[in-house]
Image 1 (cartoon, one colour):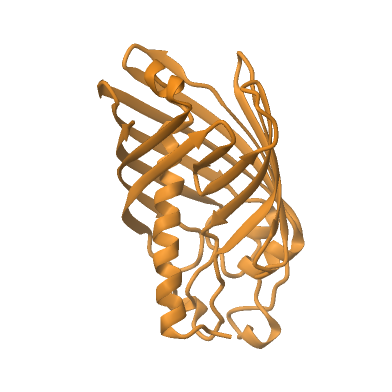
Image 2: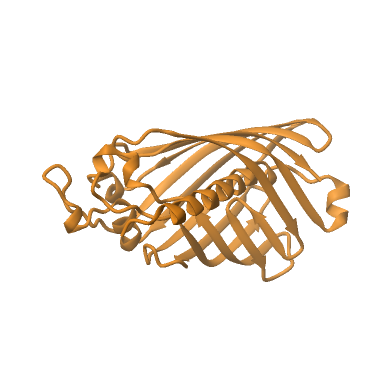
Length: 263
């Protein structure tokens, strides 16, 4: 059922913070840390950024938001990218982790005329296991998560790879990933319940599918500890999402820019 104004307002505040954390990870995973930070045993990063998100839903406007950027990492904890990781083992090469991740997959039905009469779909916290493998060729990560808030009651698994090419103060990081989402996830975020169906909006449940994402991140350290970045990524959706009556696009584009100070 639809949420009241108070809960929705609180949810938007949490979403804004989480978006800042997600974008905050953009430069931190790619930039080499200076010796002073590494010797201190922990690393902080703070800054400001903005993102433009083109969503695939019918008649839904693009989102443009500004936010703070926050990142923290020490020997056992990594807090960035919408993720909170607890590192099970202490290794820079192969790290096994328990992960919680806030994902902004939900929407307000009022944001699209085509969804009028539907219930809102809520963002959720996802929890599970992850592994990060640093190799000379690429940083590879994999995760398997379930919906800890039981909004969709679904599961998702992701495999990602990236490598930063440094050119003095300038860096380029191509990244590529694939994510499997199960039938429950698709039914919740892209489905139409029988009582939500109309002559123009057929009931839909969908099935499990795989989305593919690719992008390029650029960063420039113009002074010690001061970095600006830009990241552009495109997600190509699987057939089960493209076939949804709520969707009129086959992909999603995200562009983020920002400034970060690393302590």
